[in-house]
Length: 495
Ligand SMILES: Nc1ncnc2c1ncn2[C@@H]1O[C@H](COP(=O)(O)OP(=O)(O)O)[C@@H](O)[C@H]1O
Ligand SMILES: O=P(O)(O)OC[C@H](O)CO
Image (tube, rainbow, N blue to C red):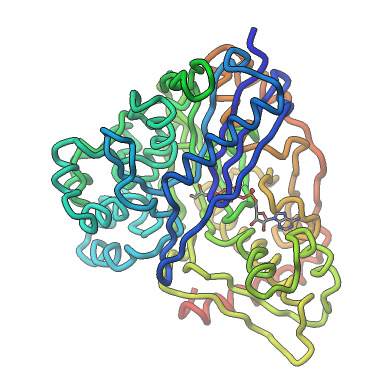
């Protein structure tokens, strides 16, 4: 029997490939940074060839590291940065425009106009999402308008649209599969999450021809087979999910009420609400957590655009640290008498405020404020934002778990995890297996091909590495949260 699942994680800042064994352990890993382009304020782009090229390099590197060949791989599982939008020529697989990344705000005005025209309620009812530039539909419309001839090519079916998973599938299968999975489709603003289908009213609203769209499949399904020329033999592709949903699977949050929060570039908290979608009255998103065997499981999602990106700002913008891990030690040295608050609205604010036009601010600066206080403010800003999300979740779903399962690069910071537990007033559980996003993608592929056990057995294999329990006095916690809310309120004009 083949020894590994090859899991591909195409993230915002890097592409990674991992070989995962049947016990869930990682046999080999390869990673490549992905160049980012910021052509104008609020614009974030990536080259499609960089996305595919880095993935291909990582897959080849990881096979070489383990001395494995295509026949050692039971299946491939793919997980990806979501919403990021690509349009390409079917004949060549070449993108006609750089990928417009999820963080890109260029369609903020188009979204505001659609909202002003009264379309927000329909969009929210069908998709569970909000009219925000974060999602794909207005990005597709922008590409079709910006590239000469693109609209005609879209109508005639010469062009194809896809999120990153779909583009990778197209290229990995040598152009044979134009497919996506339900979790990625659910982030486009074009997919009815209740019926599980592309929605004609929404396609008309955003001006997106149906001929552009991929076929939508379960997360564990037959997504095609790789072009044999790529890896020296064909490899079946059997699992796909957006990265936040894959993390939910990797964290084994299969029961209604379970919550996970992933701290990468941004932070995304998802609460499993079972097979019934729950409409949010707190401006959270309703989304598909996973779809297996034709059965959709839903989630409430809180999306924060800046989490680890605040640490990158300390490193690359302020240059007060040289590696991300230094932020932890520096923050621990901060003067406890100074309450500096950073609202890291570098690309606007996501849930629950949804204000794409605001920009960040620092509050409470004194002559004594230095690098340590700024580092602490950056790490705490991620915790405060999580408090906002979890409060919103509790309002929408009062019976949710009080324990938060965390993962992602930033959870390496013990300072942040302790402060998160303190400010939440609830335990924070960090698992032994830190590669939960990749594990989720691997699991979906392995479930489909019989490499991994059913969900209940898999859930029993989840292991705790460390539980952070709240140590802050309740009145101190309440005071700090009030300071945060006051800062956000002053920035956006009232919370
Ligand atoms: N020890 C650390 N302390 C704080 N932040 C960290 C630490 N290690 C990594 N990070 C942050 O985590 C992020 C990378 O996490 P990752 O899950 O790989 O992100 P992504 O999937 O978005 O590329 C970076 O923004 C980095 O600044
Ligand atoms: O690349 P990440 O891990 O920050 O995730 C990006 C999200 O999928 C955007 O919705």
